[in-house]
Image (cartoon, rainbow, N blue to C red):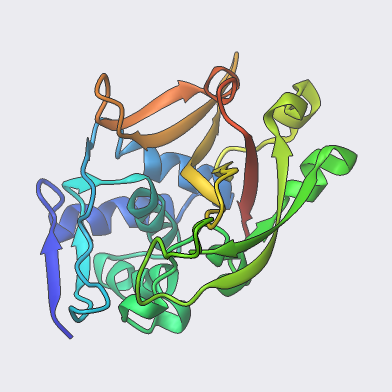
Length: 242
């Protein structure tokens, strides 16, 4: 299996030291908060992964530039690791079903984490939203015209539970925890979310820490979550387990 590692300023020794420090943080959520903070201002870069239906998958670690999904993949793999070598071994089990490094086995969709990483994350959307949640049947990867977002990837019929943004009130915001993975629900056929990030609780507000593609940022930033959601359809929340 071909492997590409772009670590930039992240030497293997630096990553190992960071992971050893993070492993001393008992709470999974707080550990995620600590690790993700180290990525603030990391450049946004799309299409860093290599592979498609015509090209064999390449195992990529790129810590120089991340998109919204690779950002949370690296953080989730890091929070399970105590060294760079453990991180390298754990990442395939976050990015791919059963750690099988192949394009068709890649977890392309946020809710794939719930489906295939259930031992590490729990869907708490229903718990947070209670009777305010909305259940939608989605045929992931299939557009409204029947064509595919990702050729070579099988469509998946999946029930998706979200909290519409109009119902993300003080109670919901108050029950979010640092380290929760938040998916921004998409109304579009074939997609579960349009974006993902990490919930960060601060003294006076709740932020979304995410790799933003917006021209004014193009990097990992913290944004006020309540304000961010004003123009969005809703949220799906996965909470890290022990």
